[in-house]
Image (cartoon, rainbow, N blue to C red; front, top):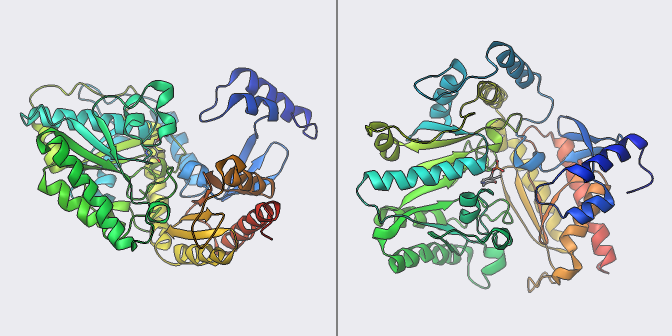
Length: 458
Ligand SMILES: *Cc1c(COP(=O)(O)O)cnc(C)c1O
């Protein structure tokens, strides 16, 4: 561990390395270097245990949409903790927080989505969604309609089902996934795979891979297509304009349910309330988490349109599913307060308006950099492709770990920017100001300059 750290930091790093298993971390390296200890956060800034300030260009894990340190959310949680710290929603019981949150979600989610099931994480939401999809087709008397089609580079979470939906192949071998009944088709990653095709032609061709797969499996065997509006953890893959309308047409034609994973795109991230709004998608069901509470409490929700929702509601038998903490009062209270802040401060409108426009303008300015092959973004999402050759889109040798090194420079100079391979990704709080956006892109350019210099480009 680094010797410049205080004894307090070293102590936390030591006990953490001894006893804490970290998500998505290589533990040997972590133990050697010591974890960064984050002790507080305010607005768009994080502070570590050495007093160093970091601009959080990722809003945590794409989730702190209203920014850190919101008094309203803290007070809503405190009030619920005092009044009703826990009660469940099993066996015909409810409480005001979850009832009001359900009604609020019906107001803001895409047209037709009207009933909500609550879980504690995006992964549980997707697991629950797959159980609902299977149950739906069983109720329809079509027990063979079970295969689910998802996409390569998709991220839908880590439980056995959510990881089976995910198309990031690194997630599969350690647990012998995907489970049977989950298949993956290509995703609309134009910069990576589009070659000389126009984005529009490419988008159509990739969407039609869904039709080909449905015909290959037989429409009577295909239950649902599952997808994020914009693929987040897979590298911020923004679909060409032709993609989603064609997907929608194909799902309708073959009576395949469309389950849209809004865990990142929901709650303003793409400049409208939901990614489905931004891309004109009419989902049968959606999954929400992250921005639902801005990460202040663990909570997720699966929203159902009338076709699926009516089938479950009108079934005479008991629905055998639900978590001890489904619709937890404290989480529901905090989510409600979060939605009120988003509405009161017009953060979604601003993400689709001035805040988003300024962020996208600053992002595009990086395109002139000798290492930057493409910048792309929507709302408050941005990606920067670092490439060996801008003209041919040739990648660096993965062994050079260009993205990872760029991320390290970024952290060291005070910006949290994520690396997905050599794609640098940004997703700041929707509350970010213009001055903070300027600072973010100054720091991002600085980090890219440092890696470019090491590689001999500057
Ligand atoms: C983060 C994420 C999930 C998983 O959510 P968890 O709360 O980590 O289980 C699912 N889908 C998408 C699109 C995500 O980004």
